[in-house]
Length: 128
Image 1 (cartoon, rainbow, N blue to C red):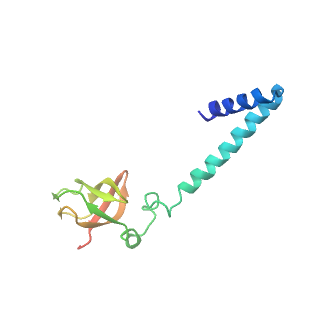
Image 2: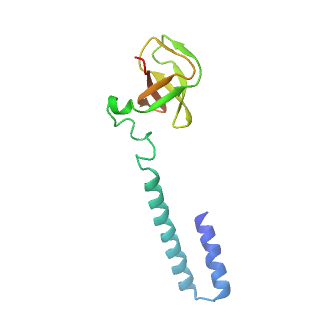
Image 3: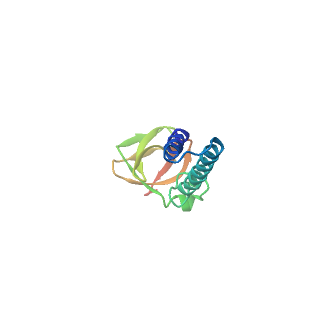
């Protein structure tokens, strides 16, 4: 899509000032390189670990990861260590697993995010 928009931009410039083909091609390549480099810089800055804890949660120690708090969405009670619940973490709803068994949590209870397993968070009750 970017290349198409750039081709349209180059075509409109050429409509006003007729350039030879090699100048058009060079202008097109230069614009693509500029946009590509700009997008790469923007992408690298958006993956900053200070912006989101998701990528860095595995690298944290248990005590540091425990500072990440989540809130339980609905009542949950299970003896099964693999049972999933839903929590709100960083403003989004996530699947989560309790790190301890048995696990009984009421809606709105604050839990600590202690790690992750794939796309599920591993949480423990703040009281435990």
